[in-house]
Image (tube, rainbow, N blue to C red; front, top):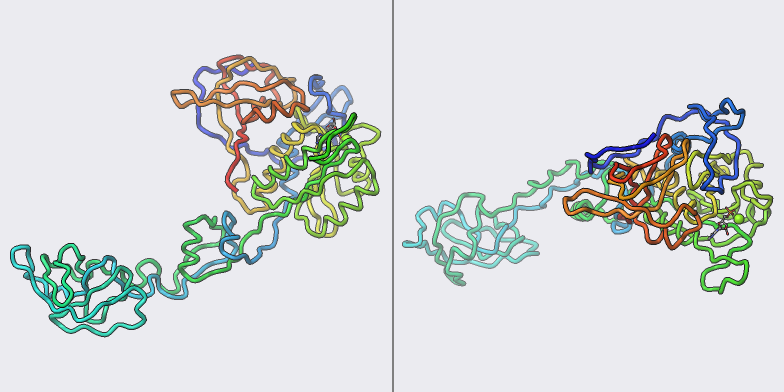
Amino acid sequence: MSESSSDWPTETIPVVPAADADDTGREESGRDESGRQDSGRDESGRSGSSGRPSPRPVAQHLAKVLANIGSIDPIQLALLDAQGLLLAEEIVADAPLPGFDNAAMDGYAVRAVDLRQASEAQPVSLPVVGDVLAGARSVSGMGPGLCMRIMTGAPIPPGADAVIPLEHTDRGVARVQIHRPVRSGECVRRAGEDLAAGALALAPGAILGPQQIALLAAVGHDRVMVQPRPRVVVISTGSELVDVGKQAGFGEVSDCNSYMLAAAARDAGADAYRVGIIPDDHARLLDVLDSQLLRADMIITTGGVSMGAFDIVKEALSQLGTVEFTTVAMQPGSPQGFGTLGRERTPIFCLPGNPVSSLVSFEVFVRPAIRKLLGKRNVHRQTIQAMALERMDSPEGKRQYRRGLLHREPDGRYSVSLVGGNGSHLIAALAASNCLVVIDEDVTEVVPGSRVTVHPLMLAQR
Ligand code: AMP
Ligand code: MG
């Protein structure tokens, strides 16, 4: 089936996971992105008529992942450390906000009745009996027919009921000439007009941006209970890997996945810890995982999940019985491991090693899981509908994620072209892209000018 439409919309639509379903798919290599999938699958992901196990649909795997992501206990953080997080407590104003009646302008505190006759032609002259500065801890009362010079934010003296701004006066010091009348209450900020004592300032679930942090500070909270950033541990596996900074010799490969995924995890809102490289060694892997469980809210490994003899992540973790390795009907990124480790049932994602497969897997499965741990209501990136600028082919039965470049046309609509080829080792093409072009399972061909779904990769706010 081909997808074609000339009136492509630009509105964003969320990617909604399908309902969870049982699955018994057996693993496949999933390394070859060019091979077409045989189409012996049914809705449940079980074997079709060919007798071969069918890969699990992306939406089904995502639903399964999210169903196994719980929540992290709230913690108390200093105000600025809580930025971007979700409030996990109710904040009630203990005192009124503002805390006292105060001046909204620089001017003179007056009694409105004294200025009833004031005009440009016949100003009213009042004796100035004192100054009230911002920060004044006590203020004496003010009798009829008198006034006090007052600064913005300073307490209104008892007896005064309005402030006449400086610009309607001659700015006198001992006496002042006032050129217009005022209403009672004019330029006075009333105690509690923002929040009454006992009123709800912020409800649980509020996202703490600068505005909310301002309110927390204003009502005197220097620490708040929040849903913490998940601590995400990132581990690269592969005996060929060397750390960045070391010259990669023949047969060696610089580890880019742990850097890429740590950056992606931070971008998703997590605190990322890059553990670095573990060689293809069963015992070393289990050792490191065991020690990392102490601090991790989530673990991500890359590499070693295919069918090879040295794919030790799959080999070591499938024996535990809590991590499932499966083939997902997607390209790239079809071999996926997901499950939990340890007493706390810490979620672990075992992603394929090819950098592009790894990042696509992160975007499709891990990022929503991190967003769920953060307590976000909408865990999915907003997708964009864009016009394909070129022809795109895709194997039937797999959801394909191609690297793309999303453009904004002069009329405001989006268009997208492909960057690089199909190979999931193409890191330079990945770096030149700003989106993934999503070609659905039932679409084999996208013709130029038709509409495609685009999953933006542009960095979001933490
Ligand atoms: P694997 O999934 O372990 O079979 O690895 C697939 C391909 O990805 C191999 O070519 C690996 O060398 C490469 N690869 C695996 N891990 C990394 C990594 N951390 N950084 C860069 N390339 C990697
Ligand atoms: Mg490997």
